[in-house]
Image 1 (cartoon, rainbow, N blue to C red):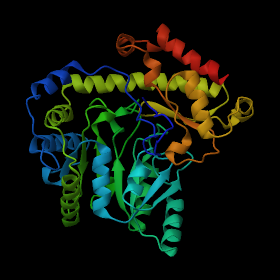
Image 2: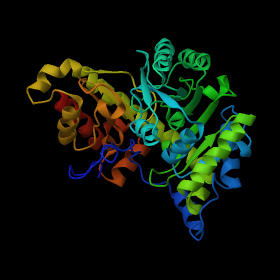
Image 3: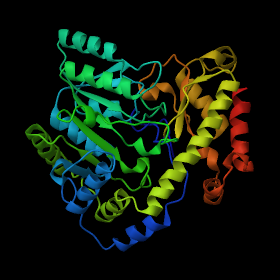
Image 4: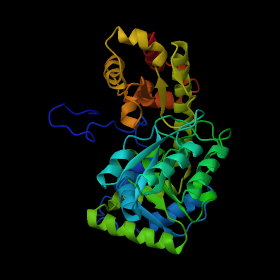
Length: 402
């Protein structure tokens, strides 16, 4: 279930899941996982050498030369990020909006999370001038901001920061003395990889930036938790990795043996894995673009989606009509829209956005069909938008908004 009953819930347990791929597990990965099922012991803290070496080759193909001693693996991005932030210390600067799970990670450590508005063109990175002003104000008030957490392919907005905006954000972070953690889990879900340039802060700030990749973004199913982190190749990076491994050990956050084998295989990107990732990104891109057209036709706002399996809609122009249905804020919109679409539509308040703003994240996975057969049919179709079940789901979205 994407949501628990009201009794006894906490704010974190009430949070939304990540956008699901909506596709069955790749058969090749099933075979790899089954072949490693006899591995009863977990991986060592930070992952064994095979998965770390595979991660190095993965980053090398993206222009980031990496050595295994500067890599750590963990059972999913939340566990790895929690350890990394705990190791580094200090308060954390975040863009607004940001992934629903980021802020709870910071607060769980007893640190303060400060949200900075994003530019009008994209999400994922803070406006550089707002970042510098916020850091100045926080320090003047006694705060201790040390880390900037950002994303080069964003959840929830589904956008990719243009290289010049990412560079400006990195320059502002450097000027403010902030260590940058770049969540690049959605990097390989770009809808048009030949038209969209994705850069990493580790290319611009090699000594003061770490990279985090959750493999459920494009390579593994969400139920197989695995993530890798890349640390700077400096004495400070060596210290940070060692402290991160200490926390992973203390919390028992060790990758499961069979999942680590599947992760290493996926990170090598053999033809079947790379082909599925590419095809899935193209499919979700086509469906996201169609959903974006439905939103615009109904009078809503949304940035054109560029990556991921989601888009972020602003229904402020429909406020008067929604008010007649008793919808006045993002929480009420989440309930109202989700009930009519039959799928999770988490409101902007989940992503540190304003409660009064009528914003929701829409996932494209539910639009691919309700059965594995329908979703595979969409994946294999040259014209997925013409399939009756895909067209029907998009028409439902349009009619509910209308």
